[in-house]
Image 1: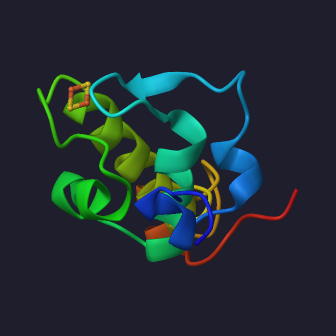
Image 2: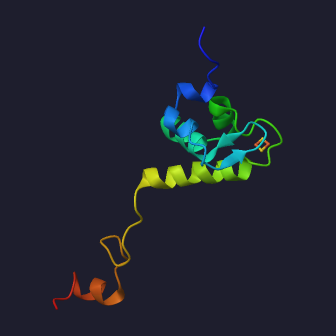
Length: 106
Ligand code: FES
């Protein structure tokens, strides 16, 4: 039988788990940021509870929940893609454009 493997290793890149310089986010279970972000990304996780099931982070004192939620929110924002450019195609049509129709030529 081989060495014990953390549950998160099933979902994640082993290089992320073994990176000693990565910041520990969940002190209760010694789970680092890369492991949590990797679990969120690979499982497209949307709740702290699902992250806890995937990699144990957040399963203790709950003090890391705010950071886990932040990582989830950031993942969801990245999935949506960049925000539309100000003044882009989705901009509001102003009074004169409605009155005279379309865009003015420069
Ligand atoms: S620090 Fe994550 S559960 Fe305690």
